[in-house]
Every structure is written in structure tokens, then in C-alpha cells.
Image 1: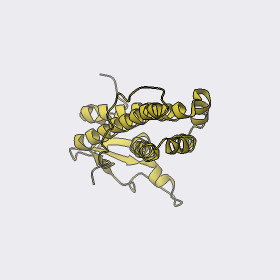
Image 2 (image 1 turned 180 degrees about the horizontal axis):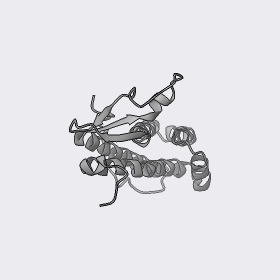
Image 3 (image 1 turned 30 degrees about the horizontal axis):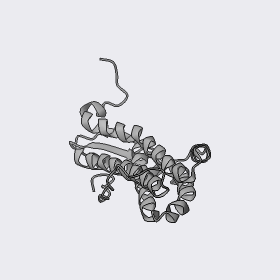
Image 4 (image 1 turned 60 degrees about the vertical axis):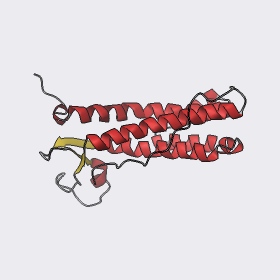
Amino acid sequence: MSRLILPPFVTFHEESAIIGRLLAGYTALEVGLMHCVQIVRDDFDAVLKAMFRPRSETTRIDVADALGRHFYHDRGLGTEFEMAVGAVRYCLRIRNQYAHCVWYDDKSGRLAFVNLEEIARENRRLKDLASLTVLHVDMAILTAQEQYFVYTDDILAWTNYEGRLRDRKIQNNPLPKPTPPIPPNLHIP
């Protein structure tokens, strides 16, 4: 067998599959947020370009929030829109911790990772990675995180349809309003 770039992902293949879905799937949430905003603004081109020209995920969320907030408040959906934006922000925290880390098997029986951004901000001279905080995830936390991504996708879709319903563009909202879950832990405490 040829050498692998992430051997711990072979050992922890179920965990790595979820991590891959979270990393790759995050963009679907940004697209869902974009659709939420463009539906009430009725300007797909402007919303898409305003959100996706910046390279920063946080900036995209901020732009969507600024472009959509008042429109959703005008429709009596301000709280729901703000909840959807907040859920996307939390999903970004989950995504970012995985996008900017190094994975390894520390023989604890759980998948270990360290965030390189943690020490990159420090001004002192660094000699190695030993000062990084070792974090762990397991199937329970990763499953809860993936379910939170699903909830976020659901609340974005519901808000989108409800905005259309309130604008009389559709006759009914085909989706049930999702119940917000407790945000999952980012890692094993």
C-alpha cells in the first residue's frame, strides 16, 4: 500500500468520514444562507456577488446578515433569521477548528488534533509543537456536530420558504419549523 497523507484517518475512519463531510459540506450552508437572503431581496446576482467575492467565511456571514436582517424583520421573521445566522456562525467555528489543525493518533483511543493557529499568534519564539493544546473528538461529538449542520441547513431552508410565503410567492411552507438543538461541544471537554 502506498503512503497516506493522514494515517490517523485510516485508524479512525468513521470519525474521518464525518470530519470530511463537515469540511466539504460547510459551503452548502453558506449557499443556503445566500438563498435565504436573495429570496427576500429579490436580487440573486447582487447577493451572490456581495457574499462570495470576499474570501473570508466570517465576512460572508456578516454580509448576508447585513443584507437580510431588516428584510426578515419586516416580514416578522427577524428572530428566525437571526437564529439561522447564529447557527451558521457556530457551524463555521466547528469547520474552522478542523480546517486549521493537525490530526494524529496519540494512542488514547480517540482521534487527537491540535490547532496550529493557537501558537501562531504568540510572539515568543517557538521550537516545536509541544506547547499546543491536544484536543480529542469521538463519534458522539462528531455525530452531534453533523446533526447540528443538518439542523442549520433545515432552519435556513425553512426561513427561506417562510420568507417566500410571507411575500405571497408560494401558497405554503412545505417544511416544518425545526426545533433548535443545543449546540454540540467543539471537542471532548
